[in-house]
Length: 137
Image (cartoon, rainbow, N blue to C red; front, side, top):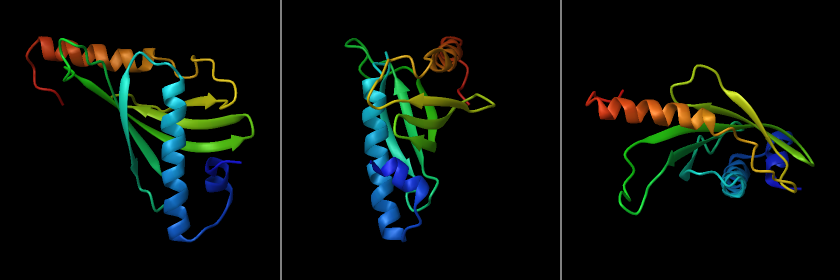
C-alpha cells in the first residue's frame, strides 16, 4: 500500500526513486514517533537516489534545564523488506559492531519494537566519557 513496499519491489526511474524515498523517510519517522521512545530524535534521508536509502536518526534526551543535549546517539536505519503487517528495518547504532533487525507492524504498534537498551548503552558510555573530560571519538 505504502511506498515502503513499492520502494523495495519496483524498478523506477531516479525521479520516482527520490520521491518514494522521501515518503519512506516520512513514514519511518512517523512510525518511530509512535514507538513512544524516551528519546527525542531528528532524522535525515541519506542516499535518496538509490534503492537502498539510509535514514540517519539522531537520538537525544534534552531537558528543560538543558535544552541542548549533553550527548547524542546516531543510528542508521535501512529498510529491508515488508509485508502488509510487518516492516523490517536494519538498525546500526553508533559504536556497535553489528546491526539489529526491528520489525514494526504499522497497524499494531506495541512500543517495544526497538529495544532502547541499544541506545541507552551508547548514551551512557558517551555520558561517562564526557564526565571524565575525555574527547569524544
